[in-house]
Image 1 (cartoon, chains in turn cyan, purple):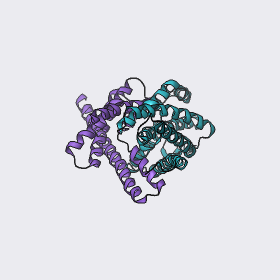
Image 2 (cartoon, chains in turn blue, brown; image 1 turned 180 degrees about the vertical axis):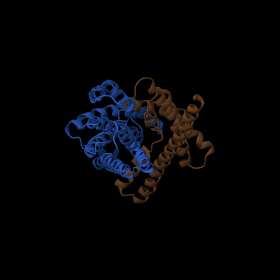
Image 3 (cartoon, helix red, strand yellow; image 1 turned 45 degrees about the vertical axis):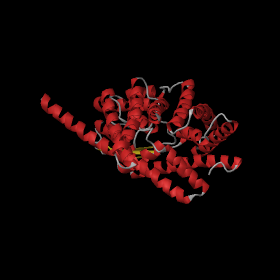
Image 4 (cartoon, one colour; image 1 turned 60 degrees about the vertical axis):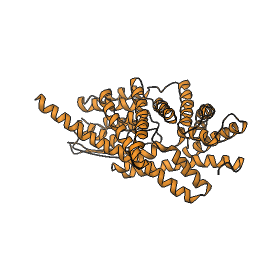
Length: 253
Length: 151
């Protein structure tokens, strides 16, 4: 039987899915399937990137409505995988609310990779994309080092202010300054290649692609919101680089 | 030789992002291989296809099929593999150039690069949509047949 409590747990599943990187489509689909499995007469789900609204009509004639506001995301595909399994399980077994709550708690506390691994991976990604786009070994080494510093900068700046625009401006400024200095000293060869390797860690190329995917698949509003976010992030990154060129003067052609 | 480096780094780049996206265990390997596959197909496409957008389109179709197949093997959403595997194709560099032209006030180049970036994103997104719709149809048909035979 669908109760307020149960609906709130179902929304928890949906919210966590969205936060951890599920498409809007999948979230709406999972929520309405689960509600149907619990014998709702009619389910209306509306999801955009920043909110979920669910309204269900029960067989008894009552209506339940709940909403969630989503403020931040971080892609975690391990959690998404588990949430997906949970939602399949709930659909086919319709367990008690208590069970769902425990499972959600178990998923919530799952860890990401350790800090050391994260730093190394930032370095690796920056270095590999520098080579990928045509840099040489020196550039890759410099880029990898800056990548690790970038991770440090992100962690530190996010502690002060979580605003995406602000974080990206400062981070790309740090990358730009370090890149310029290391090229000036002579360790790195091409500023552009070093910048692009690190940019891959910040730039919302994936968000841009996903937003267009949302638009094509019919979730126009969600797609447009994501598109705006992507453009905002991209411009904040270039503002950061713009700041660098203000400081050093005439870096860009 | 340049291409060999690119293929190796595409693998490593996808592996890196898979770790950032917290993919675990055996799935890491699948996802990273997907990234390499994406770039190999892109490069191969350069030999036969006319136009860069076609290369992106075909490559993202094949990578999406690959992710759907891996998803069936590992019993997890296809997004898991697709998100990481699509990374080498994603127009990060073009987006960066677009925005830096805007900042420098070079609006001619900005418009040119901007439309280039958006076309890449559209080509990839369209490829993903085509392939995931097709594979939905294909797997629905297969499970239908399966039920028919087992009855």
